[in-house]
Length: 349
Image (cartoon, rainbow, N blue to C red; front, side, top):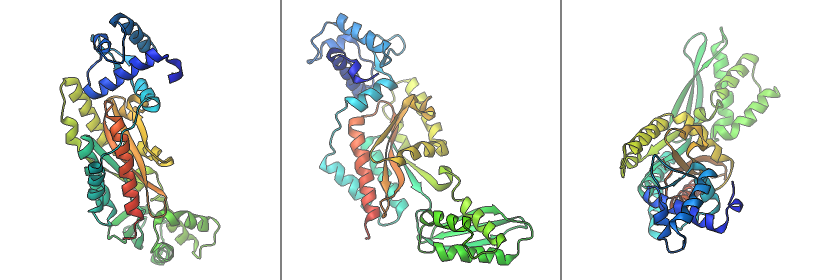
């Protein structure tokens, strides 16, 4: 279904239903539409059009209500082809910029305040995917913990420490662990692991690394634990979940929010979904059952990627809430927040 399949009358009625529903959250009936200034049609004619839109999968009738609400497909059609994106006020821009800048240079502090700003302005929960390994490495070493395992200790320049356990060959001499640590330190210190990982793996694959066989295996294992997927390389910050509980009027709404809370707890699944938004620029929307993660709660995710000092996309920030979001307001809000975060990460000060 596309806008070209709708005549002017159907498109006008469809637009009005969606816009009214997004404002009120209530099903929209033919009598309400007939009173609209820009729709000079009888309730009977409107009902026929609504029936056609329902048959096309763009509208649905909840319970026994005479009114209609947009389906996820209908919301997608509206967002992609009809929605007029609004502009943020100067106060809103200043609020986002001020709260983000006040955090200084620490990445997680910047992102934590950015999510708080987004949550406060959108009155929804906000989420941000935080890259774990875009920080420059200060120190790395391998510490034996048993005959078959070693601990990889990675210290970043911001002072954060991460430990991972890796398997090592039985009988590995301590000198091999020292050699592996020295090799990685020589290449990583002052650089991010993400930026150097490919070069190290290529060097190991071409056997140009000045390492004996056992030490090379340790290095490969150490690199592998930081390249195991989105859940290994990123974390998720969520802010403002309590705002989702405001303005709940029906038991069904409370159940949907409960489902959404459960989905937010499954952070690995949400990170995988947000990873999809890293492939492009600009805002991306995931609406309701378009994704299996939100099939039960009927939620929407509006996100935009942000970039580091080398203009590489390193994370994603946005808003999550019921499908009845004010998309026209939230889309520019998310876009501007991502731009502010990117500029802060690009600033040498």
